[in-house]
Length: 241
Image 1 (tube, one colour):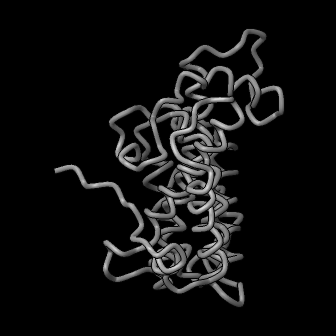
Image 2 (cartoon, one colour; image 1 turned 180 degrees about the horizontal axis):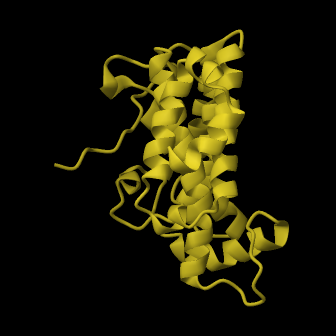
């Protein structure tokens, strides 16, 4: 187990294996942290890695003990996805799969240095150098936090499937529509804050934001609920051949 030995000393195997959700966590920790090919992840200190691992274990333990595990998992998933798209829209480039959705442009990467400086000043990014971050450094700062949120999203999405909170017709499942909707809403807000030309109307952005509420309120099929509310098929991007 190597690096994980101290962690296993503090979290008893009885607790880990008595909660089947932690089996999912363990596999994702192994793949996304212990065996990660990304240099930035490999350079994380033992303490940093352990903090990330303990955080997801604690979240999953809360989900397992919740009166309604499905809703508890949804709440954690929404929290992580909102964090993910906050940085993701600034890292995309045209041609990315997400940019096939109307409202996600892939045109905001140039704002990363300015955005990163604001995050540094507010304490959102840890930056100990006197000089302002370069474009590459700004990207790495955003990527690090995006990766953490994405890692949690992947894990919680697998837990969602374990809890049978999904549509067995995967083309009608709500996870990816939610991702698209929240990313488009986040880009709308970013453009509003920075005084940029909008690519979707405000009413459309609000419609996308309500997807979150359908998930949070516990609708069994949030995608169908969204479509019923607005009397249209959710505009999923065409798949590339």
